[in-house]
Length: 147
Image 1 (cartoon, one colour):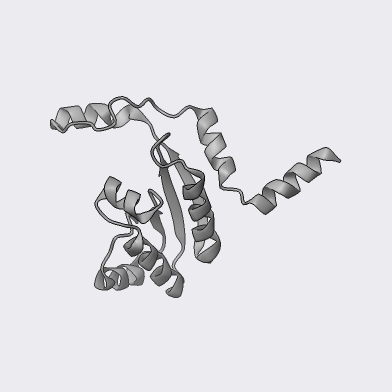
Image 2: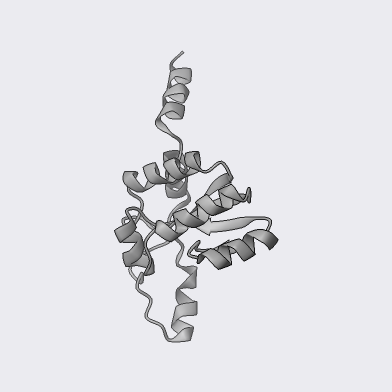
């Protein structure tokens, strides 16, 4: 099930009883930026992750990335911390921004707030994926290349 993870206790419980895989979005750090971008802070997302861990339900953490908006080192550090904290997270997926939804918004008559942004290049997505590796992994990798 795809969700933003913002669920009340009753919905969490009911869904955990029937859903066998959760795809949960984690969109921004700090919580204030998450709230600015989505209308809600990160607290409920983290509560959902903790609840699903307790219920032993697997999660794929999906991280939509927009260059210059939420691609800070602080955000990647928090994603790594979340990944390493919750044992039920099976993988972290970077979802690089693309502008293909622009036409959909136009068709619906809704102003598209990201009009000036272009889709992220494949190389940018690779850099973001590299940022998910923790510093220890990077150091081991670098040491392996120097020998």
